Image (cartoon, rainbow, N blue to C red):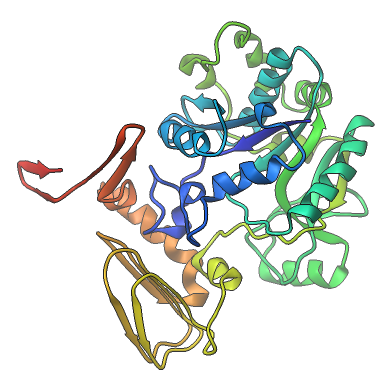
Length: 364
């Protein structure tokens, strides 16, 4: 088996801790390891480390390589010159694995920003999926829904058909039905099978691959990749293919798509609070308080998310945490660097901190 880790994305819903140049997969949220490093370690349970390839954007390349170098020698990291969604990334990564391995490998594709603690259950599910992949199926791993989530796509286990993100009423029906599973974006297939389906279902991607040659270089040419359509693998291939099979994921799973989801998976005190960093509290309940650089004192909060970083503070009701993306998008429109980088910026050679900034000066 070969592994393909998708390590792009902006992590806008976890602002201000996540920034465009330092997205959530690079974050060490619970003081252990980053989500990217945890993903790589999880894949090592069923794949040789040298057979794991990570695919990321050019602006994240050095940080991804730096983090993976801490847990494996000479990590293989491909750099997309421009972000084009999951379909071009997965098809391109599969072509790379076919050409460099000179074989027709079984490929396991995983996002880099999921939290899975039951590694044994995950590995068992992958073995189950491998059998179907060898039979020529494109395997997707469904997650049993625990509540009517509107932010995920779903898979119908009876028909193996993908359905788009539902509204709340439809999501409740899916939950009651019992045959609908969350689509977690984890896939497994023989490389040749995906290529055949891409040729049939997404010729606008497949035809352009003829201009890519990985026999002599790992570099992805910008001019050619820029011509790729911006489309997800779900829309481009999975919804059109008749070779899709679903396996139920036997492990726990959380995509940490919001501060509320991080609160849900974190250890709480007797009042239901999660306190990370230098936090002093009096009488708060069911709240999440994160301090990265300062003392944060809270009194009598209830169902609140509060996140402090060097240059920004977020405070919101827990049930509004999905709307953090709106703040991120507004900052981006205003060309406010708070969406882009932290005051402390990590580079392959070390890091720098912005000490002061104003009209005509910048001190690092």
